[in-house]
Length: 149
Length: 149
Image (cartoon, chains in turn orange, purple):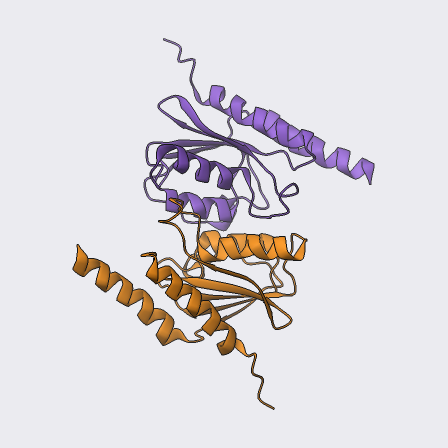
């Protein structure tokens, strides 16, 4: 049986958030948090809008998801994010005890895997879902930005 | 000439924030951010109050300091925090490009130095300012908490 709610389905929702960031002239990264096939948080990068380098999509999504659930921990949740999380966001995920992280494109320079950020022992990680699309969007953003300056 | 605004002076201000957290039944960690001997942000751990594991003293202080300065980066600022920052907070400090981090007690289990979190190349670190007091406060918190349960 085909599961309509697979990782690609939810990554597409995260990608829509990344597109919303792009429209706001933000580095286009989006995230959703899912529990039992239900999206309980959506967010996109807002570092420019909020003038706050900590306003990554994941950080906002963690806060929103905990608020929705009424508990601090996200043990049964999955984070879908279009770019591999950075050290800060991976470090935050440790505290949330999130069950699973699914990311789109790899971030060779700033991603947590390169820096070996410690995740919670119960957190599983899958990378490369919709990788090409997620990566392309970020590349396009920086090309357009460069051409404008 | 004695400088009244030395690291101990500002760590005492961070310690007052940690005491405020203690009073709220929060793990007692406090932080201030200073630029040119002026405190521009004060914060203490609010993870229980806000039901948000990302609400560490440092994260709030970074956001408040950037808001005060009107710029995203904290290059000329110093963070004073009573406990060695975790991976998340150290990862956030990377993005702020903060000039200096001064911490009180070492966090052997969750501190960023153990996990080798990458700081911004321009960030200097000093540990052990008011170490005994900062460490004692956290220990006292957990002893009291244990006795209540």
